[in-house]
Image (cartoon, rainbow, N blue to C red):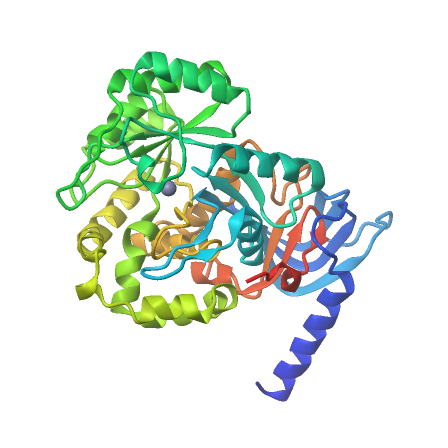
Length: 444
Ligand SMILES: [Zn+2]
C-alpha cells in the first residue's frame, strides 16, 4: 500500500470508529454526505445527502438540511445501496465437504450475514421452536446481527426431503394433515410456510413427495391464515403445479431441460417469485475446479482457514459427493440460462443461497449468487433488486433509500453498476441508522 493509500485507510478507520456503536442500539439520526445513492427500485442515482431520522430515511437532499440534528458521515463519493437479504438459508452455520461443519447457530449465522452486508435472512428450515423462539427474541431485544425471518419446519411427506437430517419436522401426507399442521403452525406466526414438492431424481435416487392435493391444501390453508408460501421444487412440472396451486415463491431451478415455453408467462401472471439458488447448485463443483475461489478476501474474513482448506484438499474421487458434483457440472449452464429466460420475461428473482449446504457460506454466498445472476446475463439493476427492494417486498418489510424506509444500508467503495462483484467492497454497514461495528460481529 502506498503512502496515500495508508492515509486514506487510517482516515477511513477513524471516521467509521467515531460513529461505530455496538449493534442493537436504538436507532438514531445520521446524515450521509457526499453519497452516491443507488435506488434499485426505480433505477435512479442521487448524488448528495442521505438524511436519516430515528433510523428511517427522511429524504435524499442536495445539501444538509439546516434543521438536521445529528452526526454526519462524509462518504467521499462512495456508493449507498439498501442492505442485502438472503431469501433461503438454514441458520446452523457452514457445511464442510468432510469433517466438522462450522457450527455457528442462529446467532452466529446472523452475525456472519450482517458482517457481509446481508441484514435480512429467511431461514427455510431449522428446528421449529428454536428458530421461531430466536426470531421472537430478536423482535423483543434487537437483532445483534442480521434480522431473521423464519419458516420453522419444512412440510414434507413421510420419508420426504427434509426428513433425512435428524431434525424433527412436520409430516403432511394428506390434505387433512395439511390443514391441521398449517393451522397449528399458524399459531406460532411463521414468516412463510415452506413445503417440499419435488419429483426430481438426483443421481438416480428420488424421495417420496406430497401429492398435488396435499400441496394445494397447504397453500390454501396458508393463504387463509395470511401466511406466504415457499415451495421447494425439483422439476418444471413441479413449478407449474406449484404456481397453479398458488405458491407465492418457488425455490431452486430445475434442469438440465429448459423451462417449457409458456411457463414464464404463467409465473408472471400469477405473481410468483423465483428463488433460484444458483450458488448451491453449482459452487461446490466450481470450487473443486478452481480452488482460487476460496481466497476471496471477504470469504477469508468470514470463514476460517481450516474450513476453506477442507474444500481445497477435497478429493472428489474418494467421496460420496461425487454424483452431486457431476450433477452440478451438468446443471450449471442450463439453470443459468433458465434464470435468464424467466427474468427476461419478468419473473421477479430473489437472491437465496441455501446456506448450510456444501459449497455455500452464510452471508458471503449472497454476493456469489448476485455474481451468478450477472453471469447469467441479468442487468445489474435487476440483480441488485433481487437482494434488496424485491426481497423487501416479498418479506413485507421496507428498508432502503426512499423516504420512510428503514435505513438499513450498505456503503460500497466501488459501484455495483460497474461490476456486481463490487457488493463485496464493503466500506460500512448501517442498520436502522446506526453504523455497525463489524469487528464486534466476528465470533468465528
Ligand atoms: Zn434449503
